[in-house]
Image (tube, rainbow, N blue to C red; front, side, top):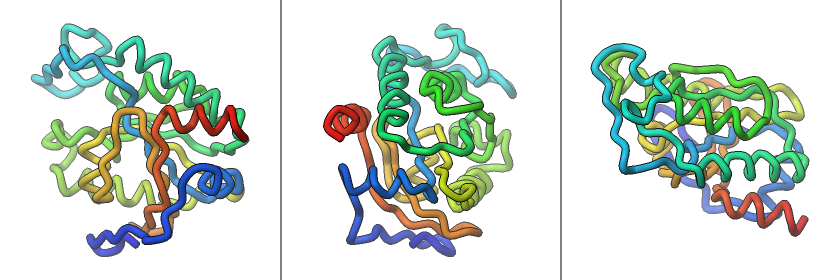
Length: 197
């Protein structure tokens, strides 16, 4: 349980079909790192809101493979019957695009999960980490799951779990800033399970 800044992963984490069955019932937060990006590009943030740019000359963007993967994950989640309530995303272009391509519902930009590289504009690193923990810990409406699409550096600092690009981390919210790590699903695992279940 993550509480008062202490995280301990649960020894009984779930995976595969068992994890999907839990998600179908709702009550979880699914934290996705944005999909695969073009690492030949670099972020160039000189002032507030530069991170909103979808210009690859200014900010790292999704690759073609990342865009296809985002669509595929969304299709798999719908096929698997996973109910989604609210969708939150960091305002970065690559996170907003990942969330929108998944097609799971209206996407709400949230500075609560802003990339730590621009923390100075959002009250500092500790403020973002605290806000991210609070967002993950929010109870979704009954029978639904929250989806959060953000960054690897926020995930590892807020939860001690580091996701690969496009990977979904599943947490059981406990309110306040408390949550429990339940399991993880890489992009190819969503698609495999959608074909098998």
